[in-house]
Length: 422
Image (cartoon, rainbow, N blue to C red; front, top):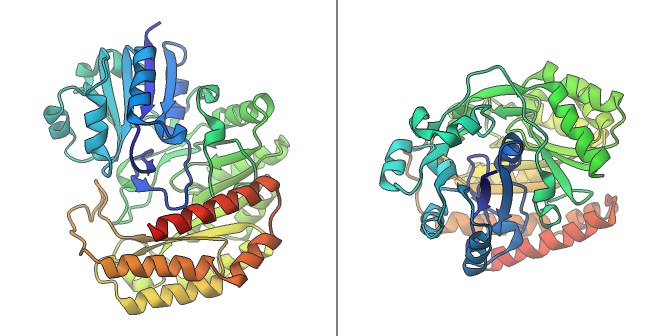
C-alpha cells in the first residue's frame, strides 16, 4: 500500500485551519481537524494512512520535518489557511512526496491561480466528503486538479481512523469529558450570511444509519462519551436532525454532545429532544442584536426570539455560548455597547467576540476592514469584564459536573488571559 500522510503543519501560532474556516485559538483550545477525520475514513481501505497534527502535538518545524522524513509518505495532504498559508507553503516545499494536495480556506478563492503559482501542489480538495476522493488522488488531472463539491443529496463515509489521531491533545471549552469525537451529520451550510463562506461550500445530509454506525463505534469500541457535532449549522434540516436525536435516545448511547446552530432553528420541541439525547452545550451564532443591521448581511434574527430561546435553554439546563462580530461595515460603538449590555443580561456560559475579517468566498470577501486598534482593545476589555467577574466565576463553579470540566475551565481561563496580555 502507498503511504498517505495527513499533515496539519507546524506554526508559530495556534492556528485552527479545518473546515475552510481560518482562525486563531483565543483560549488555548484546539479541536480535531474534521477534514482529516473524514478523509482517513475514505482512504483507509486503499492506503496506509498516517496522521501528524503538529498544532495539537506542539511540534517544532525541525521535529515535524524529521518525523515526516521517517514516514516517507508517497502522498501528502496538508491543511492550510488564509492566516498561515505562506509559512505552510514554505514548510511543505521541503517535503518529498510523489503527490501533494492542499485543503483549507485559502484554496476557496483564486483556486487555479494558487495552484499555478505553487506548482509543487498537485491539486486541492474543496469537498473532503466527496466519495471520489481516491480517484482524485490517483489522477488529479482528470478533475482539473480540483475536487469540487459532489452534487448529491446524501453522503456517507467509513468510520474515521480515530486511533491515528492524538485524541487526548485536543480540547474544547465546556466539554465534560476527554477525549472526544468529532462527527458530521451534514456538510456545508444552507444559509447565505454575507460575512461567512460556509454557504458557498454546498449543502448535503449525511445518511442517518452511517452517523449511528460512527456513534456506536466511538461509544462502544473506543469508550468515548463526549461528542462534538461539527456541522456548520446543526438542525439546519429539522426532520433529519430529529431522526438522529431520536435514534440516539432509542439506542441509549449514553453520550453527551455539543453543537453549533442558529437561534431561529430552536424551539421547545427541538430543545426537549436535544436535552434528552445528551446535548449539554449549544453554540449560537448571534453576530449582532440589531435585526435591520443583520438583515443587510443576510441574517434575519429577532431579538425577542433570542430572549425566548435563552429562557428555554436555561429552563432545560443546557449551557449555551454566543458568538458576536464587531466591526461589520456600518457598525458603531453604540451598537457594540448594546451587544455587551445584552450579553451581561443573557449570561451565556461562553461568549466569543470576533472582529470582522473578510472571509475568502464570502459575499464580503472584497470588503477592506479598517485597521482599528481601539476596537481590538475594546474586545479585550469586553472579555475581561465578562469573564473576570464574581458573577460569572461563581455561576461556572456552581454548574461544574466533572473534574475534567474544572481542569479545562482553568486552562481556558489562563490561556485567554495570556493572549489578552500578549
